[in-house]
Image 1 (cartoon, rainbow, N blue to C red):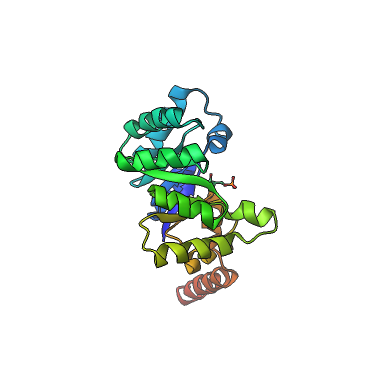
Image 2 (spheres, rainbow, N blue to C red):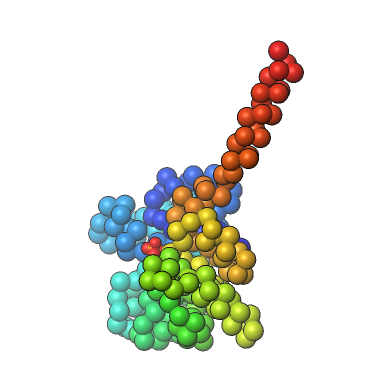
Length: 218
Ligand code: E4P
């Protein structure tokens, strides 16, 4: 399972890149706004900076919701860097655009997926990735992980090339459940990745080992 970081924060991207476990990055307009990046030129520059930090795919989201505009915006984004994946919302015009991009060699990430039917349509249209949102489904009392499992099963059964990119991750448990469900990629904020490092017995065990080493050498 690939690990993507769900942020536009360069410091956090560098932190995970330094661990040697980073496969890519996803962004969205809210994450760009969170970094205080304003204006088309600055936003595009941030996408390029992110691409230059990581070796893998970097999702950059279109703002347009009309077919022609999505195509124009997506083609501009794709030209920025070969690692850019054009992120397109799960709407009728978006599906048309994903189909166009797929036929024209532009990779896409269909975002805001909340049902297996939506994932199926995006895969049929030729999306490179589909992004089902786990946390937001959990928020309304549904199971985000059940949806990941369902989509993974459907894609496997029908041999779709589209990758399941589990998004809206809130905890380390989500990451582990995604791995169990067979997600191809998990995109997560920094905190859940750092949580994966921790276990009380690791801390206690290390303290004891270091104490015993100090005794042996005193
Ligand atoms: C990433 O592609 C999604 O936009 C993101 O994971 C959404 O996360 P959120 O539900 O925490 O905003």
